[in-house]
Amino acid sequence: MHLIKNFLTAVQFFTRIPINGALGDWVGYSVQQLRDSAAHFPGVGWLVGLVAAGTFALLSELLPDTAAADVVAALLSTVATVLLTGGFHEDGLSDWADGMGGGTSREHILSIMKDSRVGAFGVLALVLVLMSKVALLVVVADLDVALACAALFLGHVCSRAFPLLLIRLLPHVGDATASKSKPLADQITWGNLFLALVWVLLAFGLVHWVLPEVSWWMAVLASAVAWWFMWRQLAQKLQGFTGDGLGATQQVCELAFYLGVAVSCA
Image 1 (cartoon, rainbow, N blue to C red):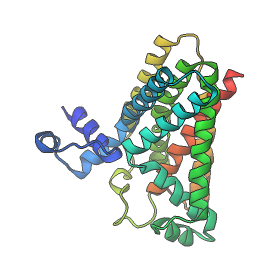
Image 2 (cartoon, rainbow, N blue to C red):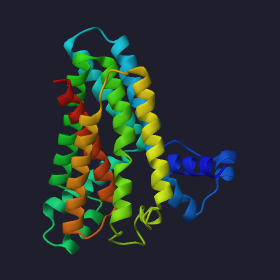
Image 3 (cartoon, helix red, strand yellow):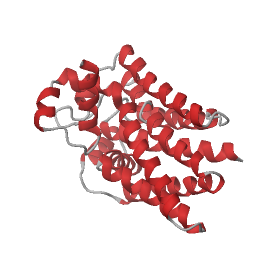
């Protein structure tokens, strides 16, 4: 029962799916429960990834077989995920880019990240990352729509596991009283990391069952390199992580996953 409650807590925290009424009363809330829900971050990726893949597959069937069809499917599947999550991670990417791009010191970077206004670096990061995602998905879908759908699903699951390593390896920095991520930031346990890994392995197992001929090692490697870049940036410039850093890491690792899939297709 605790696993189900923690999973639903993660769904409530990381998406716009309402967990209220009798179900909300049953799930309840505590700081420890929110902390443990981090293990189900990749589980939330299952939901978001299935919505993204389902939207892409449905539009690919409904739209006429033209060059623009894959573009529309990729774009609207991205819109669907943003609506489902409320742009939670995209907001982190924007704030992280503003801070890292405009900050001249650790304190300056953190103060910029806390500013709710979006600057030039934030806008550029959002536009470039979202455009790159759509473009890479179109490249993959041009070869195989099923592969693009699988990449969407796995990309959302896998990219949500990598930020948990930051929580394990780095301290939380910034304004602890105002941070939405602080309850999640008190050193995730190895047990919860293992549970997150189970979510990821189950996702890869499911896709391997459907598409046994596809190898995903290049996509995972690309995500790992992207994670290393984010870890290095946060460790060197902030000596820790923020919630915005976690959101940005998810976005960058997701983009890198699609890049790895596209490269492996070559």
